[in-house]
Length: 265
Image (cartoon, rainbow, N blue to C red; front, side, top):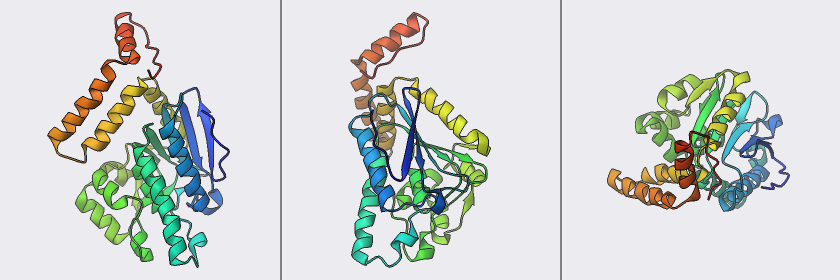
């Protein structure tokens, strides 16, 4: 697919099916300003509408110091309440678009992820982190509270009591703690972070894309209700795959002892 030249993001294809996206404002620790909010919303909406051949996204930040420091407080300094509300509404739509993007998104956290940066990480499907990275939802230090889904996504990752402690105290925590608590899947050395994330992204992309997307929806929406309702959703998602060409190709390839050639059809 053709993507525009974003002002606050860079994009790079790795093969036919994997897209690396970089938050690209390293001079301000990749803080989210209005332009980055627009760029991210446009990206996630394009991938939702028509991802083309893309099957997995790796999201990272420019530089080694920060993945994303959260909202750009310099831009917000002096903002009227109305301008703040309008900007935040843009950010809200971007966070929701990330959560609902059908293409798997793997966060490669190259440095600190605070506030909205941490919430961006929490909106991804799973997370690899550099060992030196730290995380925090620090909004209560600023007279606000998490507003990018953090009060919902953090408890789902680390549990209610742990999330309350972290949000109420606004303290930062290490990548090792994040992995121990379930927020991070893998901790990597800095020079191995992106290679390992891309390797996993290619492993995801090698599988049937419709199957991966249906599984993502089933997990995401199934967790919103009780077990049996979630299972019924799973079966509905499963049944949509039975008539696909990829399901037939997968069975043929297995019996012919070869790698399948999936076409997302």
